Length: 154
Image (cartoon, rainbow, N blue to C red; front, side, top):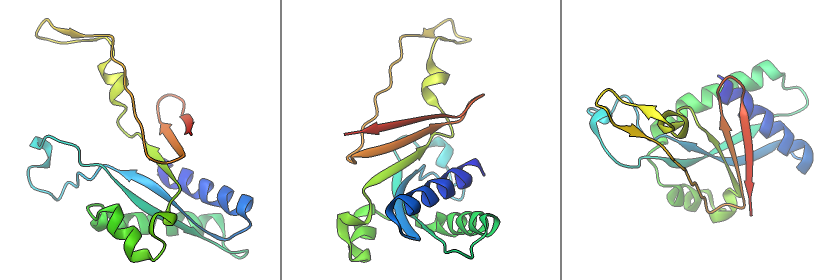
């Protein structure tokens, strides 16, 4: 997936800049698995942040890295409910486990709301979306006709 490619590229970039072959960053997940009965009728915020670990060495091919990242993402879906504080505590690193997050907007709600005419005669306009995290760096990716990437930093 595009998300797998971006996460892998970011992991490699972090590794190069930090001179390591094993990096961890946070990824925001929807927390709305299709296996949860009635999830499409539930209201509320389900999102969560999970750690993404990218490990490679000099013999790792790009293809094998992409397959590994995708495989780990699929295996990790069962843990999208686990509170980040619990994951951090169990890691032994605490809050030092993550220092930034990546948000892949697979459903850009702001664009869907802007100047939408509805069948019932009402319209929605003047929509502004404000997002904030508790991290010093957030990378927000919005796929559209062109991929938009924004870096929000403290």
